Length: 320
Image 1 (cartoon, rainbow, N blue to C red):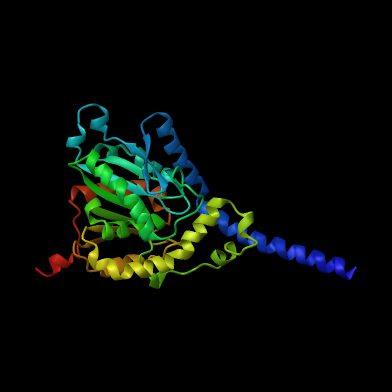
Image 2: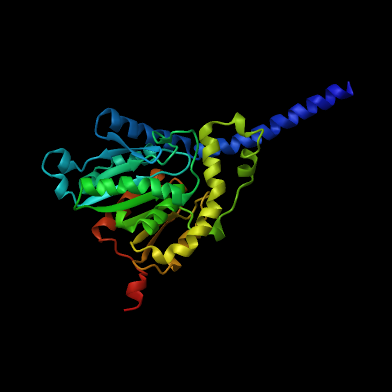
């Protein structure tokens, strides 16, 4: 009887721990499930209507998938590729895929101003390696994405390329610009970790990495957790390279973000990069600000393009 009781208590404890692991996993994918579902459905509808085209390139041993919404005038035949002046390229967070920017892709104001491109980062969506794995290094991901950006530059030779990322993608886009400045003209960070000082590993990240929990979870959750756990080291490594960020950067941060510390906006405002930084704080903004307050975010993107990437604390300007 005692052995049976102990066995039952052990099984109950395992169930409790498993639920402690699964609930945060659900949180990673469903912070605001309705808005995520609506955004992805919007992207799927655009694809079914052939408003968006799908393509891919092969980079080293990886397939990199992306989608394109041509500028409205281009689609109507009133504009050639040589006449396109703006490329707006979106990079999603973790977990996620190109559909995370469904609301931006659907915004006719953005589509009237620029060619809109949404990338699937390596191991996400339609992008994958020959062997099943996730790449957690920002530097390695930058090296895989840069060839696509250079190809887009060839396709639209007179267009400026703005790289906009959300969450993990927002931490990635400055790295791409630092290492491959020839591929990017400006970057936009939406709810992204930029300073290792404000990174805080959540208890559930450790639980999700436990060897006996990991096999019970979907691959996407495992990959997302791997990327999150590696972020501290990635951000710390990036700290020495801010002086190499030669393109303008805009940071959009919600004040009520519970996944990325809003003080990252303060860190960005204090940076002295060669081309400068613009910081926009959105009161009440959550982590999924590009979905929940898409009109506000899209308006800032339009203003960023219209202002020719005007910043406020450029190291160049401050020395004049």
